[in-house]
Image (cartoon, rainbow, N blue to C red; front, top):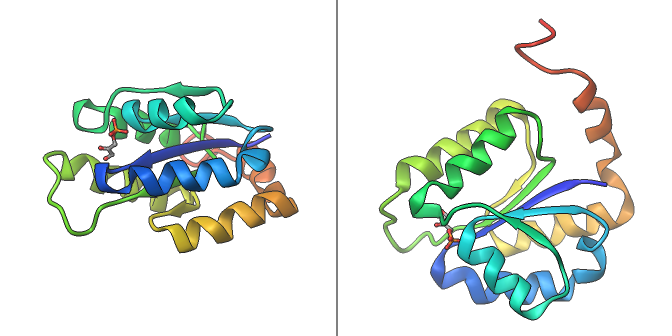
Length: 140
Ligand SMILES: O=C(CO)COP(=O)(O)O
């Protein structure tokens, strides 16, 4: 079972809802997290149970970043809006930076998200189990 987070900016929320709905059969077996409004939108139209954090501009990206730092997430699907400035741009940058620090797979557009979900379905994420056994900063 993987720990997966969904985040979508406002003009990407319809795309996220359609995506998660299409692959509900894949996501149902995993532990799911999201920022506030994204999770609400997904849960309105699916039977998935998602732990929702705060809305992005109110700290949700940072809460998800904290999960990354604690080695509590395996994968993030973060559909960003590249054409609209966000008030919490520093939080977004910080989250993506932490994904790079810890080597967390993160899809920032739907094409990559499609590839990652197919990889989940095939079991390609088994390597995450090994990563969880080694915690940088703790074991070194
Ligand atoms: O702003 C966001 C991510 O940066 C998403 O937050 P919401 O899901 O609450 O809209």
